Image (cartoon, rainbow, N blue to C red; front, side):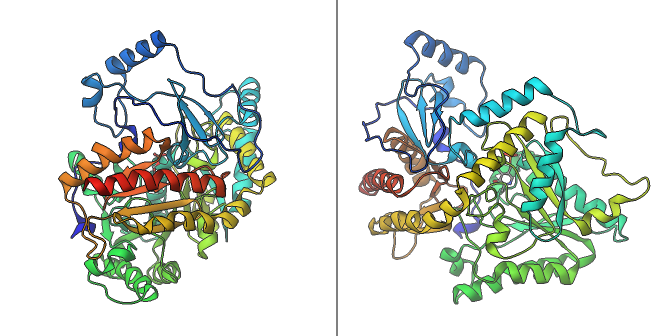
Length: 505
Ligand SMILES: Cc1ncc(COP(=O)(O)O)c(C=O)c1O
């Protein structure tokens, strides 16, 4: 069954070291929204000697993440990205690409914002560093206040981290300690969904539902249990037949089942992304999160909304749970909080969960040197101000249907099985046979995604992600500033490359 299939690690074929090929010239377009002046002029290539020197140093010393080093070892070279401006990035040879993935679901307001660089510079000059270990500094305080304002319900307490995996790790530890403090010390297990990615620390990895990413590190932190995800396109393979609404109830009820299988007294939390990234953008069916909330309340299990990708405008609200109409107990976030101009993560916690930590000698003995870094917090404040001033959330809500429509037009291609997602976050599932939904086997997937698609898309001027952690998908999560002209350009590139891919099958 393809949804549970075990794969060798991953993906990120966009970052596989490959030989460079000349990208066809593509027409430049104006940005849809006004942005600041770029930090430096765009398109400047590195000279040949500098490029060769960097390639050699990369080959000798750089260990890339989630990537096979064999391409580099073979001397194929690696794409070196040297500059970003708006929704474009430029490589060392001066070639220009649409950043169809916002770097890695990060650069919400686009590249090259002088304002964000200036906010970082100013803060570094004033106070470059101080920890949050019993002390505070103004930018972390202001940012905590701001995030509490944006967060729904009584989620008023902000615990900073440096990234998403740390936020997830923090949330699990917090859930465990919360239950120890409130007289339910056995509650420690977590439930998450098949193929979901929640980060790489060994706790977060135990929450991650991708067997191929974990097997080399087993045994992981004990206590992680999986339930089906909300992939309606492949619901029948999970044994479900019925409407989307019924599927939502069915999928949510699998969480109740897992809680009962394990014993409610042992389960601390459920970790869910609002729209699941891995597997290719599974939106929740209508009513899904409402039923999950009911189940969590009934069994006193914390609902953690892992919004590392979905927060900060990605699906049209500061927090995706607001868009989807549920209030979690904890939100985990990172990535878009600073638009990537400096690293930062944040766990946002409800008053109820915070309450037992308010008293006496109790403390949450957990933290990170760089969490809530003054420079990152200053950048985040400026980034959120830009989002507000430029009406980015409304822009995403207004334009998301147009983005969807542009991608839906690709359904006429024989290789396109499904198009799904929300906001500026879409996945296109590729299939071998559209009628039967037959997917590619591991070899075909390897040849199609790594051997052809990723490189062909990049060569055609589109940086995005071809992913086979579940069934093969192309994922798009561009900067939130783009509009219909760029949607058409993305569709045009995808159409030509996917047509070629179909012909090669
Ligand atoms: C939903 C989710 N949680 C956690 C993480 C881990 O975040 P980080 O890479 O910042 O540790 C990611 C990263 O993509 C993610 O998508």
